[in-house]
Image (cartoon, rainbow, N blue to C red; front, side, top):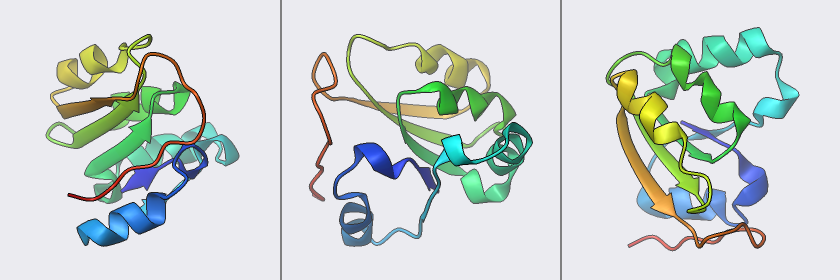
Length: 107
């Protein structure tokens, strides 16, 4: 699972509570080819990410992969990309504009 940690102040704790295996990746530190290969791999069958340019890599995701995008209502553009690629898309709107690190609680 791919997740940009910079915007999630409690990403590791949140995912651990859910009992999911994950890998936190900071795409801005990776060459573009490595990003494309990562999104095309089985390791990214579920992508959880904050709205941003890194989600453009969804074009490399295999059909049937799942995406959870955390975004503000001001920027809802990756939904169409995911659905046209045959991906399962779910979003979580977090307010209207980004206000700082986001915290999530497990159900």
